[in-house]
Length: 107
Image (tube, rainbow, N blue to C red):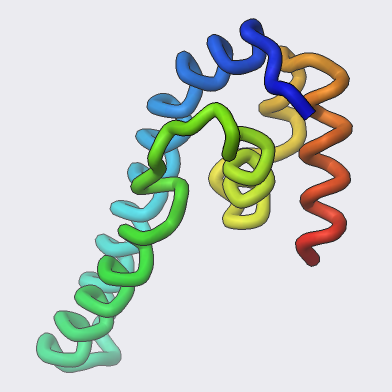
């Protein structure tokens, strides 16, 4: 299915905001991890390093913007809880249906 120009434009405008919000949540999780009193500093360090290594590969942090990947990328963003279906309210019905279908088939 072809991505509409309006959906592509909205996506390019929103993706940075979505990623910033997601990375803010990640930073809060990292802070909470570092504040834990039940682990040694070395344990916290290595746990944080592992989390950052894993998290930086997610679409909520790093994403190559390609029009052909739009539906799959949005489905991944929803799967990873970067965004919700409510965030798609401003997009076309075609996009919402395609993403919903991909999200269900991806589970």
